[in-house]
Image (cartoon, rainbow, N blue to C red; front, top):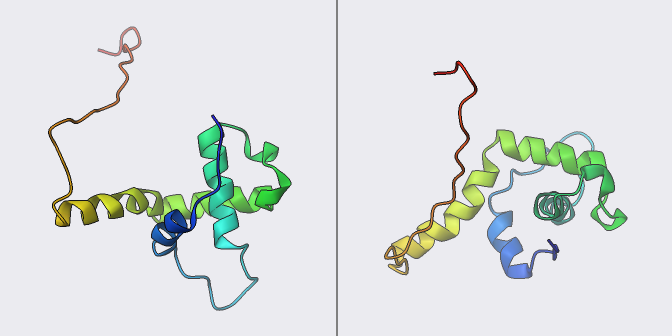
Length: 110
């Protein structure tokens, strides 16, 4: 799957959910570059070690992913536009799709 960088509109929606940088210590890598790096790995399925140079440091991208995961940022980013649409009565729940997979239990598990 091909990855395209975030648009300004997507970045504006995402940026407000990111934690503020620490006031002390080494400055972190640019937020937008780091998020694009993480999204590139998630969308394309490539290994972080295979990231193009334009996305900065590979360990920084992985570390940023882990930090944002611990702070539940990945859950808040998509829920924000959904909540806004619901408040503005722009959601249509007539058609809903749920994706799932079924895995049989191992022998003796039940």
